[in-house]
Image (cartoon, rainbow, N blue to C red; front, side, top):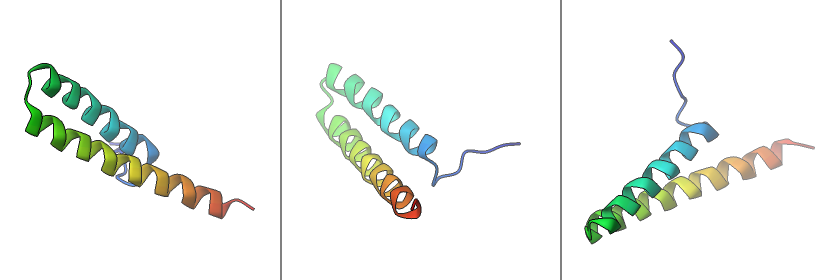
Length: 61
């Protein structure tokens, strides 16, 4: 069985998209603490994704 690795770009993209969908849903229902937590989750995913891209650029000559 093939699993998604936690250090893959696909995994981080799923985290960001999931956080975005949950944040929008929370905002729609006016659940601000939940929305804030999901925006924070998205920002963590964006940070991890940016680190992965910077590591890739450093590896390429």
